[in-house]
Image (cartoon, rainbow, N blue to C red; front, side, top):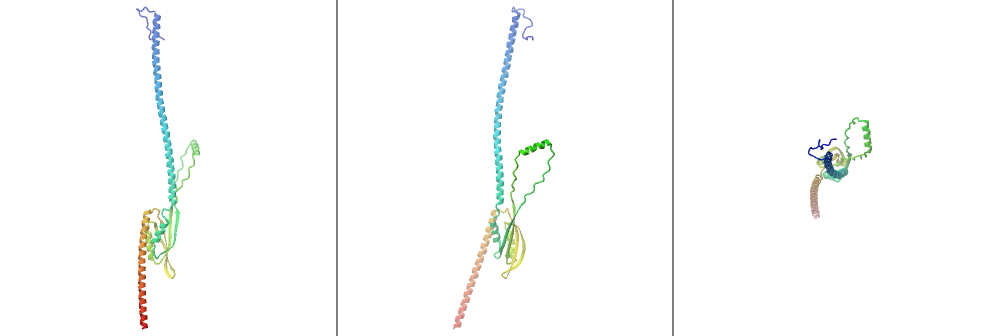
Length: 287
């Protein structure tokens, strides 16, 4: 290969040997080529170190992002676990709340007894509960046709999955009340029926029958009333109703007590007057 730094012919004014000139030119060319090669290799090495440093920085960033991702993944798993625990606790709380009586039985008996006239008697009180059936799930359509390989893969995945626990449905009940009693007049039954319909504890109040009967030679009325218990009644509403009924009953009892006291006083006065008149008649007869 021809040296590009070699002169095609020696200079006419030079007395140096031609071989010497060619060797010096070759030496200069080699030095220049080695210098360029060293510069190129230095650039390659520098580029390698710079690139390696950049890749190390990127690797550190990737490791930091992976560590942050793993930490956030753990937090997400903890959050999911807490959400599952919360859902389980809420389900247990709903079941417990459903088993607890929202309308106390003593409040129901208080509503009935305080709304009855004083001349009426409660013979029978029955509560019957009926569980509400949950709605049927919607019908599911058949799956689309799939390939045999995909079906086998799905079967393998299904075998690895843990079987799901059956979900416990919250029990809900409807309560029906049957009230049987005895009254002296039909007006007492009508007043009792109207009062029960105004109660916050009952709904769908219906009179089933009234039958005539006798007790100790007196004409009496046998009746039966059916109703349902309200499950959405508030505690304050029920408390206010019972307090009003207690105040009305106390007022009625005080009034009746005053009337009985006045009648007793009148009877005592009449007896005293009768005794005085009999004593006067006895003295007059003795004379």
